[in-house]
Image 1 (cartoon, rainbow, N blue to C red):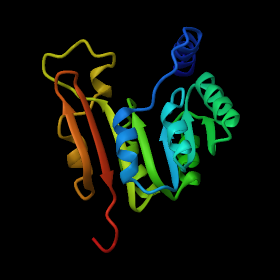
Image 2 (tube, rainbow, N blue to C red):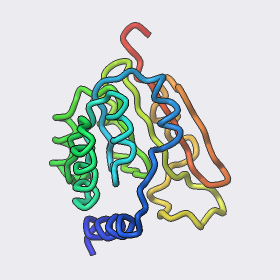
Image 3 (cartoon, rainbow, N blue to C red):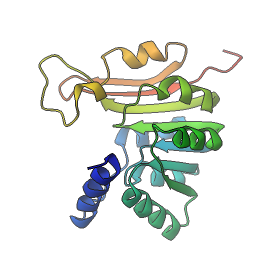
Image 4 (tube, rainbow, N blue to C red):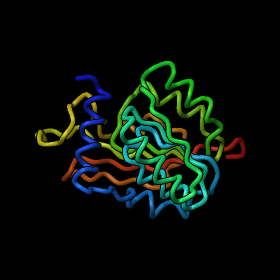
Length: 192
């Protein structure tokens, strides 16, 4: 089964069961801090974060490998007349990187529960000085084996702080009990 088929199946089941996702609560709480503009939701899934951002005044680009999820998101955005441009993309492909580059310059990038380390240096260049990066995902914890993702798709405990050491940390939480790390970073301006 391809990655796209796997995710299409997962999202189709969620929609069939009436499970409508809620936007990330930390992102929702932190957004008043963040100025409006253009946002990119990477691996957007069913689009709860993208819809919330658009409702709060952002123009949102939302990319995911699942055409089931993207179709659902675009349909909801269109029905609510929200400025969301959703697109089915393999984010690890050259086409995916080209689409992210075309969406730039960006004021905010959101990545929740998706980890592709190759994107870290690349996405930093897409964000305007003073722009923001929000990431929430799983962290590798000794002895914790019951998370729903493989070790290779988990952060190391200090990885985000080390990778983005030149950025300002606006929010940081490390939920050791559940092995989840959340960070909101601000790209420094030339004046900082």
